[in-house]
Image (cartoon, rainbow, N blue to C red; front, side):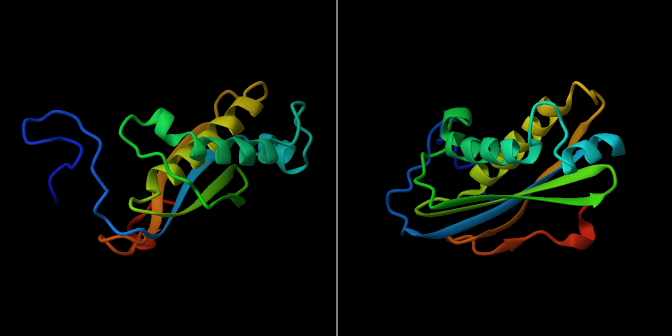
Length: 163
């Protein structure tokens, strides 16, 4: 593992200087899972939650979260995102899987934006459904894949991942 780039030689925090790096297309894909009672999932899927369409509000929240990443994570570079997509699936009768795909043409990666997007979307699902299911659990927030930049292509091995 390489040294931590957010600290200088004396141990002080710093924003990494990416000025000399070439601009390339960067893509990151992250996911999260929200577990809940099956009845709660039915309300979400049928769009019968009293606060409205849970997944569409979570989609907007995830996109907004990606755009606000440098305001939330202190040493992240502000990025002019070219695309953020939020996708939902239902792998089990008691879970919603959220996936974010973030893209940018920049000198630094977009992993934190994708991770922030799925986390904010998951928190929004929780917020909109907590009145009927306080026992929901947000889990497995993780980077699934990234492309671009010097470190190359990373894709999570599904054999060693939970879910």
